[in-house]
Length: 177
Ligand code: GDP
Ligand code: MG
Image (tube, rainbow, N blue to C red; front, side, top):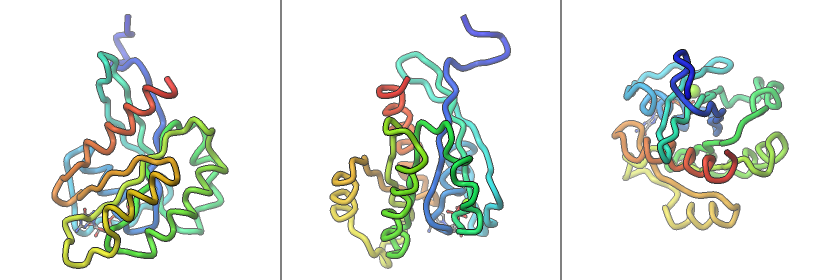
């Protein structure tokens, strides 16, 4: 009994956060348009993309919010997180600082979302094997001790990208819809 104008059952808001340069925009581009660009321009303000996923015969339209990680935009944090039911928290497995900053992002998520909000931690750029700084077991341990699932991706090689978003949406469906 869907409206002829709307081809989904649920519309959910998912925000993508993490340090600048970790690959947030490329993950969203890969997932929603199957695109990747090596000279990706920096995100200004907020960008949106949507993707509809089927879960147990329901169509869930995920509206993905992608923002710049810079502090100068953080004044918008509360507006950015408002109404989000899921967060993709991304770091770059070759960048120690982006891993250490996960704790900062977690505290921001806690401050601005409801406790039911599902958070998936994502280690991106696993194609850069030679310069990797954080091991998978290390990141997994950190994620589980903070109540998060953990997935590793490469937006470049298209590894686990759809998996990460669909894992998050399944978790949202089970826990909050
Ligand atoms: P954002 O600031 O988090 O949105 O990061 P971008 O998506 O703009 O990506 C920053 C840079 O990392 C760009 O040069 C991308 O091409 C590159 N990048 C993103 N994902 C990957 C990946 O999976 N592997 C590699 N090798 N580079 C990536
Ligand atoms: Mg970006």
